[in-house]
Image (cartoon, rainbow, N blue to C red; front, side, top):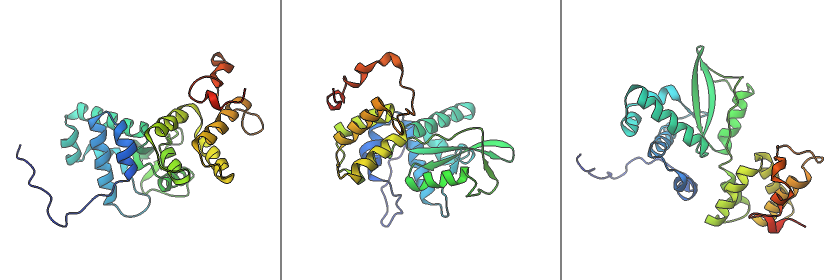
Length: 237
């Protein structure tokens, strides 16, 4: 292939959040996921109106994306589905199952606070999408990738060690617990991850909201689960 000649002066640009480079991109292992995510950033940057999203049917028929991920027919579909599923799993995109003229489709939004609000309004019927209806029988998953921006906005600069601890907490605790713990720490002016982790550990042991746990922590883990591991030193014995 002929080498690229270079970018011309005053070329159009596509904005990307800094967190994409510092937090998201290091965890991406699949090249098709990376190419698909970047292509969606480009598509959405060119769109106007609210909310902004792309559908699976648009992506599968996009010749530029097809040349990026390769494959034909069923292989191309398999590659694209896998790339999109990984992007949702890694918290880059939000997915909403849709009905388009009695046929299934998927809408993909960037995982931002504004798009989360828009997605909820769509599901509640406050926003209508022309020719599209959200599927009631399926629930869109909203991964908490913005736990990192939550930390940076309320606590301070994110370090690799803190990022690992945040990802571990994301796998252990419900999303609303983490958000509530951040709010409680900020309201008390205790702006440290150590303090927030201690709140989460306390709720995990004692229960949250009138002592009722919102998540099923298996009994076989036992009480030693709370005094061992990375956060064990934070638990009051």
